[in-house]
Image 1 (tube, protein in one colour):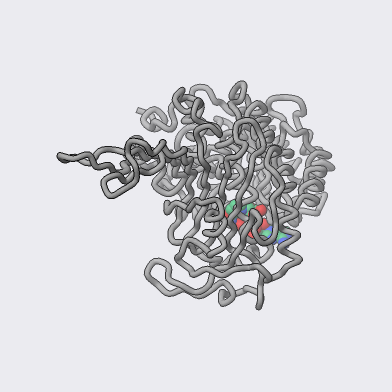
Image 2 (tube, helix red, strand yellow):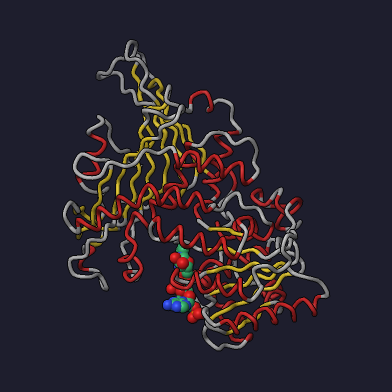
Length: 512
Ligand SMILES: NC(=O)c1ccc[n+]([C@@H]2O[C@H](COP(=O)([O-])OP(=O)(O)OC[C@H]3O[C@@H](n4cnc5c(N)ncnc54)[C@H](OP(=O)(O)O)[C@@H]3O)[C@@H](O)[C@H]2O)c1
């Protein structure tokens, strides 16, 4: 039996989703993301027979390495980072289709060499291939790459056809509204929007996609999914790790840019959006944009909707760890936030008056990403609070990672001769129902881009709507420096200001 027939996650993929002959060209071929995620993703697609029969992998980078050296680098990436072991037969077939082009990202002639290389591959094959460019470099070189893809004619290869050129762009899509508008303008001057795949790997996660299925394939939720029944929503994206070796990147970014503006907002959009008219990519993305545009501007300053903090020393995993300012590579007196908590109000018919609380941080008590929909409390007439009645509001939670699944908190009777109650949980766990060897987000997303399905990618106006909301906050924080920046102990759930944000509304954070 073929692997793809055995694994429930792969059912339906291979039959209906054929990609045309494709050459995936990775810019930033020696990079961290390429080794940890992209090459393993391509290898696992090969293992599942999901790559087109005519497939090429082309690395592009500044170092003058040979095809053979690049293949060695790629094989090592599979050995080290793939969820499956490197099998000589599968890797041998893929390696035979793997090559490398050296050049600078701002060097026009290098892109002509790349174009000639693709023509060579096509000649050997006897048919045209779809070029899929993957820009996996630091953002400082996004623009030169895009401009050279346009100037060399690579961006308009096979224009207007199903196997026309496509481009995957890594985050960040700008660092504020102005830079996002500028980047989108450059992208738009070279590619049509339907050629562009802005990646947010959160959307490739099984549980994030499951959220859409749970919402729209189960009739029981829709009548309750609104301000009449939902008290509030909490979204937590917590990391246990600190800044690690990424100080250079993180000092320029901070939590709001790194996590909240992109991943957390995607989770919010999928939770809050209206049912799309179909599963067509534009129908889904239209609804996401609508909900992002309905969010009220955030109140900044004391008593407002946002709070930020930086981790201090503490304990993680039973070990003492230093504070952010003591980490290697962090500027003395840095004002970079490692935690943010926010209260968002969506001003539409469905959600008016229902706060969405978001929090994200490094060095939190544990690594967890969760969306929790807390329903209104039942009227306290029958089971009034007291010793015998422990009644919790019904809460539906989606655990995105780790231990993927969902659960519903209900109130039940404790067995015994008198009526006592206790909250109980109904749970669904991916690992127990489907087994644990799930495809990685990047596998799904690279496959989708090859097929031309942009549902799980960010449209330009989505990115802009999110930056429009957060740019005033970022500007205000920059102006204030460390004024108003709280501290929290590593290994905790965040600062006092985060608790106060909910306490003002007589609510508390869950401990997910
Ligand atoms: N790493 C992750 O886990 C991760 C996760 C999500 C998103 N991303 C995004 O993915 C992209 C790539 O991330 P990464 O971690 O792989 O980055 P990286 O390792 O710092 O850089 C990737 C490659 O880009 C080229 N490069 C680096 N600095 C350059 C410079 N100043 N000028 C020109 N080229 C340069 C280098 O390739 P050559 O030497 O081969 O030319 C380098 O190996 C970034 O936009 C990042 O935000 C990364």
